[in-house]
Image (tube, rainbow, N blue to C red):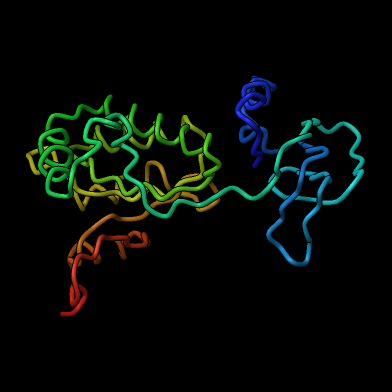
Length: 239
């Protein structure tokens, strides 16, 4: 992951038409950046190169040579592992900025209340896509999407489509949306597992966004999905 100044970020972003994450078998040589490996065994470098071979980092060090590799000039950039965001409601990206001074009660009334109730699948898609691209732009390359917009299967499918289009690595945590006849939480996680998450070797993996509800946890356990939740107050996990 590269950090550049705002002036040069656009040049870097426009350097390749095909996204780097789509080039799974390509060799990529990142040249001349300030490398912060965050690994004591590898070390940090004021100026060094990083060779990526397929899905693996093959080498880190000064003056690497790699015949035939795609070269990315990282001069005046920081090269480091991508950041990880462990909890974000990506669908809400479409609502960003509409409640800047709101308190938690305002949020539950206006966002997870009124706005979520009228959200369309295409709104969920736009929110996930824009939020994921914004995360990538800020250096976050892995995110847990606590997706409590499961108003219907169409909403969940649209949110997943937004994640896939962005190219981010994400845990999609399937959550309940506004209650209604089309809401298929939690049982629809079985369809999601079959349709989108049959392999663990992919950028998107599956979890369940839920409350301390044992019956929901049982469904998640049946499909092998981790559970993630908000815990408000002491004793919430006690029987």
